[in-house]
Length: 358
Ligand SMILES: *Cc1c(COP(=O)(O)O)cnc(C)c1O
Image (cartoon, rainbow, N blue to C red; front, side, top):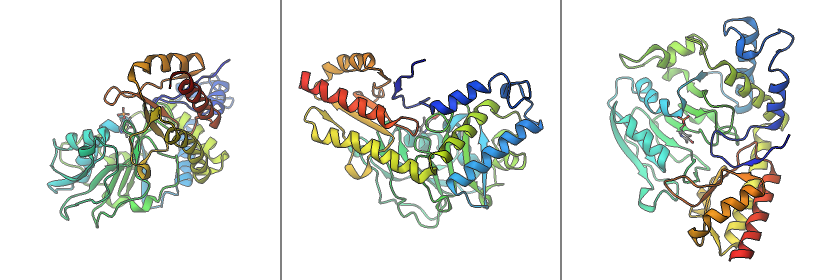
C-alpha cells in the first residue's frame, strides 16, 4: 500500500491510523457481524458510537455544558441559510464580516432572510488580510465571520471585539486545529471534510439560549431545537461519517489534544512560510499576522511554470496543489492529518524547483 501526500483543501487527508482502523472494522464492528454502515441509527451499538463521539468532541474542544452539539448534514453551505433561519429570532438584521470567498457567500445567502450589514470587509485588497475593526449594529441578531478562509488562506488568530451581539463562526477549515474558547461564541459550525472526517457531516455547536427561535416555515430537519431535542436524529443522520469523525476524535486525543495539534500545525506552517518568505521565486500574498496555518496559497514568479511545478510534484508523490480557480497559483492545505514529513517533502521539492528554474 502506498499513501500519497494529498494537499487537497477538502475532502482532505485523514489520519492513516483512522482509515486502517475503519478498514479493520469494516465488515464486523466489535463482533456484531455487521458494518457500522448497516446498523440502525436507533440501535444500542450506534447510539454508543454517537454518544462517545459527542463526549470526545465536547472534551477536545472544552464545550461548556450550556452548549448543544449537533451532527447535521448539508455542509457548511446549508448553514449559510440555516443560521439566519434559526438565529434571527424575529429581528430584521444580521451583520457579516467579509474576509474571503466563503464569508462573502454566507453574507449573500443571508440576504434571502434579512437585512445584511457588512461589519467589515477586506475585498479592497483582494481578501489578503483579516479585517479587525468591526462595525456591528447593536440591533443585529448576530455577527457572522469565517475564522479561516480556505481559499484565500486568511485566518483570524484572535477574536476581534464585536460588542454584545452573539458571534457566529464558520470554522470549517480549521476546526480542531487548535484550542478555541467556545464560550466566546453563540454558534460555531464546520463541515467535517476539511479537518475532521468525511463529507456529509456538519458540526454545529450552539449556545442553548439561541436555540428554539426558528423562523416560521423552517423545515424540521433544519430547526436546531427539533434536532437538539432528538439528539441530531430527527431523521437518519450521516451514520458512517459520524463514526469516522468519532475515530478522528480518538486519534486527536491520542496525539495529546488540541494544544498538541496547534503546536504541530504551527511547526508545519512555519516551515512552509519561512521558506516562502526567504524565496524570491515563490510568494504568499497574505498579511503575515493573518496567515492561515491550514491553507497556504502561493504563486510562482512565472505562472507559465505552474504546469511543470504540478507535474513534478505529482511525480514526487504530492498531489492537489493547484490553487483555487478564483485565485490561481498553488495552494497547500496542511490540515491535522498532513504529517510534518509531507511539508518537508514539499519544501525540499520547491527549493529544488527554484534552483532549476529560478
Ligand atoms: C469548504 C467550505 C465551505 C463549504 O462547505 P460545504 O461542505 O461544501 O458546504 C464553507 N466554508 C468554508 C470555510 C469552507 O472551507
